[in-house]
Amino acid sequence: MQALFIGQTYIDVTLIADEMPGGDDKAVAQDYAVSFGGNAVTAAFACARLGFIPDLLTSLADDWLARMFLDMAAKYQIPVHPRKVNRSSLSFILPREGKRAILRARDDDYLHPYPALNIAGCKALHLDGHQSDAAIHYARLCREAGTLTSLDGGGLRSNTRDLLQFIDVAIVAERLCEQMNLDEKGMLEYLKSRGCKIGGVTQGERGMIWYDETGEVSRLPALRVPTTRIVDTSGAGDVFHGAYVASYLERPKAPWRDHFEFARGASAFKIQHLGNEAGLPTQADVAMMRELYAAV
Image 1 (cartoon, rainbow, N blue to C red):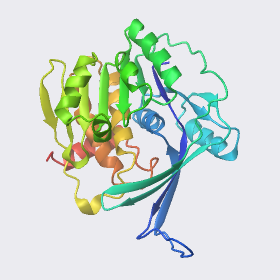
Image 2 (cartoon, rainbow, N blue to C red):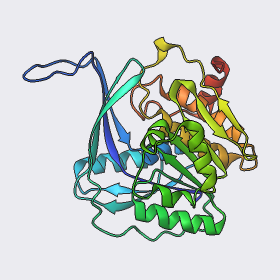
Image 3 (cartoon, helix red, strand yellow):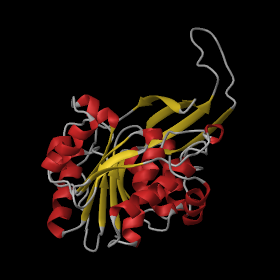
Image 4 (spheres, rainbow, N blue to C red):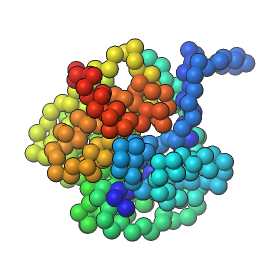
């Protein structure tokens, strides 16, 4: 095991449509995509696409949607460690004008304890806060083993504050700042106070404000992808996380600015494609994005 990702599996249905019908109305979507979903799950697929195949501890039902998900994981050779739930979780996503509306149906009532995994040789752990007991357990184990721990802080969860004490790299969303009544700089100070060596707040098209190994705060601008080329921003943050983990696995001694610059190239590719799978970049795709688009 070179890396372990822990999260919640979704099947994402992404629809391009001018409007959402209501009442007895009907409408026809212009395009659609069906793919794997979930924050850490999508990050795991991105990491695998970039050449570093992680293990994935995730929710899994015994139904046809779960079998479809396992087919997707097998395609990318991702070892799946399932934690059983009754039903698969779904996301319906409608991207429009650089934003995306999401409706989710989630089953996170886990029927069994999390599996015991051998993390010997694991070089990185990435979490999104789902499966709070498993997240805390493996974050603690990895911290004790000197393994890099990473958190996608997309929103405030029951274990967020406790989990942060075991996290080396915490990249959070503006939504978490709002939920904790902090501005971006206040959040960075909070992450520092929890012992996170690297911390950042992603801000969509404005890029990311973050602090590096020395504690210095700076801004990482977004790449200038033309508005006309933006198709679907959903999953871009997840691809960003998976890409910086992949970059770390490839060059663990490189400065974190290098990892994040690589990751923003991966995100620039994702937003030009509909659905998570179509938006997974290769190493060559990332290089092309970095060459094509300068930072804002």
